[in-house]
Image (cartoon, rainbow, N blue to C red):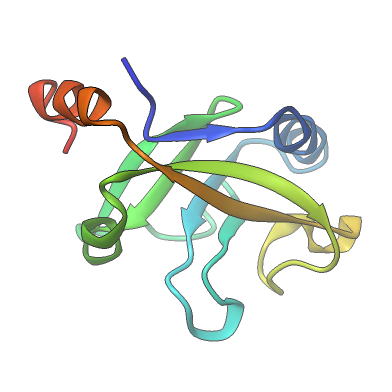
Length: 122
């Protein structure tokens, strides 16, 4: 089964490091506004998840959420969470590390999308 969200090795290393410092974490894909469209990393529970948020999956044993409306635009793609040098969103935990999480994406193949539809994960 294909995952809706994955992470690079560098992203997984940064998640592990942040977990050591802050405890359990969670991600929410920002939809714009002050932090642009980037994956935001919080201590688990610091961002309230609402009825309009959906769980896309987990990266580094950390839940990853996105708003339903934004998901409608991205449902044909797999999110690949990566890390780059630089300051991230001002509310995201990695900002003080001199790194930031970055969402990359790729379109699902027809076969992958059929699998997701069959599993009711679309």
